[in-house]
Length: 190
Image: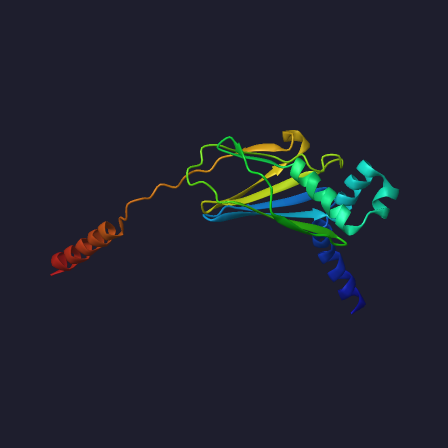
Protein backbone atom coordinates (compact mmCIF):
# COMPACT_ATOMS: atom_id res chain seq x y z
CA UNK A 1 0.00 0.00 0.00
CA UNK A 2 2.87 2.34 0.83
CA UNK A 3 4.33 1.90 -2.69
CA UNK A 4 0.91 2.60 -4.23
CA UNK A 5 0.60 5.93 -2.36
CA UNK A 6 4.16 6.96 -3.26
CA UNK A 7 3.52 6.03 -6.91
CA UNK A 8 0.29 8.03 -6.92
CA UNK A 9 2.07 11.09 -5.48
CA UNK A 10 4.82 10.81 -8.09
CA UNK A 11 2.25 10.59 -10.90
CA UNK A 12 0.05 13.45 -9.69
CA UNK A 13 2.65 15.92 -8.38
CA UNK A 14 3.68 17.29 -11.81
CA UNK A 15 0.08 18.42 -12.34
CA UNK A 16 0.07 20.31 -9.03
CA UNK A 17 3.42 21.89 -9.84
CA UNK A 18 2.13 23.09 -13.21
CA UNK A 19 -1.04 24.54 -11.68
CA UNK A 20 1.02 26.85 -9.47
CA UNK A 21 4.00 27.40 -11.73
CA UNK A 22 5.49 30.74 -10.67
CA UNK A 23 6.81 31.19 -14.19
CA UNK A 24 3.42 31.22 -15.90
CA UNK A 25 0.17 33.14 -15.86
CA UNK A 26 -3.10 32.33 -17.60
CA UNK A 27 -5.41 34.93 -19.12
CA UNK A 28 -8.71 33.73 -20.60
CA UNK A 29 -10.91 36.07 -22.67
CA UNK A 30 -14.50 35.26 -23.65
CA UNK A 31 -16.16 37.64 -26.08
CA UNK A 32 -19.88 38.21 -25.67
CA UNK A 33 -22.65 40.07 -27.45
CA UNK A 34 -23.64 42.04 -24.34
CA UNK A 35 -20.45 41.84 -22.28
CA UNK A 36 -17.09 40.11 -22.38
CA UNK A 37 -15.10 38.53 -19.55
CA UNK A 38 -11.38 38.36 -18.86
CA UNK A 39 -10.29 35.81 -16.22
CA UNK A 40 -6.71 35.85 -14.97
CA UNK A 41 -5.03 33.12 -12.91
CA UNK A 42 -1.67 33.98 -11.39
CA UNK A 43 0.77 32.01 -9.30
CA UNK A 44 0.97 33.62 -5.89
CA UNK A 45 4.74 33.04 -5.89
CA UNK A 46 5.05 35.04 -9.12
CA UNK A 47 2.84 37.83 -7.74
CA UNK A 48 4.84 37.98 -4.49
CA UNK A 49 8.15 38.12 -6.36
CA UNK A 50 7.04 41.09 -8.49
CA UNK A 51 5.59 42.98 -5.51
CA UNK A 52 8.70 42.34 -3.40
CA UNK A 53 10.98 43.41 -6.27
CA UNK A 54 9.01 46.67 -6.67
CA UNK A 55 8.28 47.58 -3.04
CA UNK A 56 10.67 45.52 -0.89
CA UNK A 57 9.97 42.63 1.47
CA UNK A 58 9.36 44.77 4.56
CA UNK A 59 6.87 47.04 2.79
CA UNK A 60 4.95 44.08 1.32
CA UNK A 61 4.82 42.32 4.70
CA UNK A 62 3.35 45.46 6.30
CA UNK A 63 0.70 46.06 3.60
CA UNK A 64 -2.94 45.24 4.20
CA UNK A 65 -4.70 42.80 1.90
CA UNK A 66 -6.64 45.74 0.44
CA UNK A 67 -3.42 47.60 -0.41
CA UNK A 68 -1.89 44.47 -1.99
CA UNK A 69 -5.02 44.04 -4.11
CA UNK A 70 -4.91 47.67 -5.23
CA UNK A 71 -1.25 47.43 -6.22
CA UNK A 72 -1.75 44.16 -8.08
CA UNK A 73 -4.82 45.40 -9.98
CA UNK A 74 -2.94 48.57 -10.98
CA UNK A 75 0.03 46.45 -12.11
CA UNK A 76 -2.21 44.17 -14.21
CA UNK A 77 -4.03 47.13 -15.79
CA UNK A 78 -0.73 48.82 -16.65
CA UNK A 79 0.60 45.64 -18.26
CA UNK A 80 -2.40 44.50 -20.31
CA UNK A 81 -2.80 45.82 -23.84
CA UNK A 82 -5.53 44.27 -26.00
CA UNK A 83 -6.33 46.12 -29.21
CA UNK A 84 -9.50 45.35 -31.16
CA UNK A 85 -9.77 47.14 -34.50
CA UNK A 86 -6.94 49.43 -33.29
CA UNK A 87 -8.91 50.43 -30.14
CA UNK A 88 -7.64 49.45 -26.71
CA UNK A 89 -9.96 47.46 -24.46
CA UNK A 90 -9.74 48.99 -21.00
CA UNK A 91 -9.89 46.95 -17.83
CA UNK A 92 -12.45 48.68 -15.63
CA UNK A 93 -14.91 46.71 -13.48
CA UNK A 94 -13.56 43.60 -11.86
CA UNK A 95 -12.76 41.61 -8.80
CA UNK A 96 -9.75 39.94 -7.22
CA UNK A 97 -9.30 36.97 -4.91
CA UNK A 98 -5.92 36.57 -3.23
CA UNK A 99 -4.99 32.99 -2.42
CA UNK A 100 -2.15 31.17 -0.77
CA UNK A 101 -1.12 29.45 -4.03
CA UNK A 102 -3.02 31.33 -6.74
CA UNK A 103 -4.54 34.77 -7.22
CA UNK A 104 -7.57 35.12 -9.49
CA UNK A 105 -8.86 38.28 -11.15
CA UNK A 106 -11.94 38.82 -13.30
CA UNK A 107 -12.78 41.86 -15.38
CA UNK A 108 -16.08 42.58 -17.12
CA UNK A 109 -15.44 44.17 -20.49
CA UNK A 110 -17.72 45.72 -23.10
CA UNK A 111 -19.49 43.71 -25.78
CA UNK A 112 -17.24 42.49 -28.55
CA UNK A 113 -17.75 43.89 -32.06
CA UNK A 114 -19.17 41.62 -34.74
CA UNK A 115 -16.75 42.87 -37.39
CA UNK A 116 -13.20 42.16 -36.31
CA UNK A 117 -10.43 43.37 -38.59
CA UNK A 118 -7.44 43.52 -36.28
CA UNK A 119 -6.59 42.00 -32.91
CA UNK A 120 -3.33 42.25 -31.02
CA UNK A 121 -2.34 41.33 -27.49
CA UNK A 122 0.64 42.50 -25.43
CA UNK A 123 0.95 41.36 -21.82
CA UNK A 124 4.38 42.22 -20.40
CA UNK A 125 3.18 41.55 -16.82
CA UNK A 126 5.61 39.43 -14.80
CA UNK A 127 8.38 39.64 -17.37
CA UNK A 128 10.55 40.66 -14.40
CA UNK A 129 10.34 37.01 -13.32
CA UNK A 130 13.01 35.27 -15.43
CA UNK A 131 11.66 32.79 -18.01
CA UNK A 132 8.06 33.85 -17.39
CA UNK A 133 5.38 32.92 -19.92
CA UNK A 134 1.76 33.98 -20.27
CA UNK A 135 -0.89 31.78 -21.83
CA UNK A 136 -3.63 33.88 -23.42
CA UNK A 137 -6.63 31.76 -24.41
CA UNK A 138 -9.75 33.16 -25.99
CA UNK A 139 -13.19 32.39 -27.32
CA UNK A 140 -14.22 34.93 -29.96
CA UNK A 141 -17.23 34.42 -32.25
CA UNK A 142 -17.23 30.72 -31.38
CA UNK A 143 -13.55 30.23 -32.19
CA UNK A 144 -11.35 29.05 -29.34
CA UNK A 145 -7.57 29.18 -29.44
CA UNK A 146 -4.57 30.32 -27.45
CA UNK A 147 -1.24 32.05 -27.85
CA UNK A 148 1.77 31.72 -25.60
CA UNK A 149 3.54 34.98 -24.84
CA UNK A 150 7.23 34.67 -23.97
CA UNK A 151 10.40 36.77 -24.06
CA UNK A 152 11.01 35.40 -27.58
CA UNK A 153 7.89 37.17 -28.93
CA UNK A 154 8.23 40.14 -26.54
CA UNK A 155 5.02 39.03 -24.80
CA UNK A 156 2.89 40.06 -27.77
CA UNK A 157 1.01 38.49 -30.64
CA UNK A 158 -1.42 39.28 -33.42
CA UNK A 159 -4.57 37.17 -33.32
CA UNK A 160 -6.31 36.15 -36.50
CA UNK A 161 -10.00 35.33 -36.36
CA UNK A 162 -11.10 33.55 -39.49
CA UNK A 163 -14.70 34.48 -39.93
CA UNK A 164 -16.62 31.35 -40.85
CA UNK A 165 -18.86 32.06 -43.80
CA UNK A 166 -22.23 30.37 -43.87
CA UNK A 167 -22.19 27.44 -46.21
CA UNK A 168 -25.27 26.51 -48.18
CA UNK A 169 -27.11 23.46 -46.93
CA UNK A 170 -26.36 20.71 -49.43
CA UNK A 171 -27.89 17.91 -47.35
CA UNK A 172 -31.06 17.89 -49.47
CA UNK A 173 -28.95 17.53 -52.64
CA UNK A 174 -26.96 14.66 -51.14
CA UNK A 175 -30.20 13.02 -49.98
CA UNK A 176 -31.71 13.41 -53.45
CA UNK A 177 -28.66 11.91 -55.16
CA UNK A 178 -28.64 8.97 -52.74
CA UNK A 179 -32.38 8.51 -53.35
CA UNK A 180 -31.86 8.47 -57.12
CA UNK A 181 -29.06 5.91 -56.76
CA UNK A 182 -31.34 3.77 -54.59
CA UNK A 183 -34.21 3.98 -57.12
CA UNK A 184 -31.83 3.28 -60.05
CA UNK A 185 -30.44 0.26 -58.22
CA UNK A 186 -33.94 -1.26 -57.83
CA UNK A 187 -34.92 -0.35 -61.42
CA UNK A 188 -31.86 -2.10 -62.92
CA UNK A 189 -32.17 -5.04 -60.53
CA UNK A 190 -35.64 -5.86 -61.88
